[in-house]
Image 1 (cartoon, helix red, strand yellow):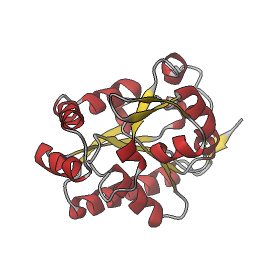
Image 2: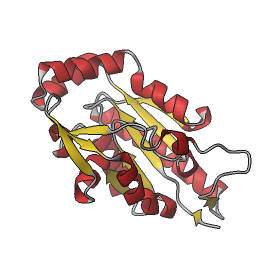
Image 3: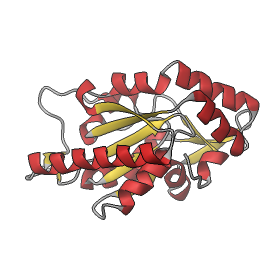
Image 4: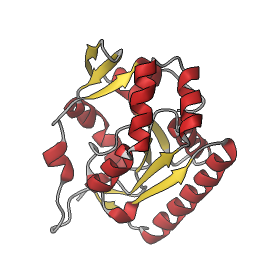
Length: 212
């Protein structure tokens, strides 16, 4: 039976909330963890199958993406950084962090990235309506989903300290590792959702940014 000795963590949220900053900070302070920026991984592993000209973004083949990163997740120790979270297999995820940010700060960050007005409004609406938070809670067990505010560097460091504390507790509680297989009573959420729709990755997300 396949086991992982390190947890897998998703860091998700509206573009501009600080996903990449959090993931990079955690990975740089813990050499057991590695950062999977899905926007970059999708390009590097040839998971972009087309382009949405209306949104000026590439289209990610979810099946291909999951096939590409599943070995990483089964090994454990991944910090998955993307605006979408519920496509990843529940059996391989140990913590889902949904970052929240004040709309005025999100607006400023997206303007600085050069987002089109329509894209800015779409993302702000997503934040206001708790879309990503709802996806996380519908896709994963309630006990592994947490929301953290991310509006400045101080909050980011506090959040990362809290997440590292969770990692330390996980390692202590799972010294023998955890199975990568389903529990007998478990349900594989990715089996019904995987590949049911295609996610988009924008050009801006493909570029490095201080506050992703």
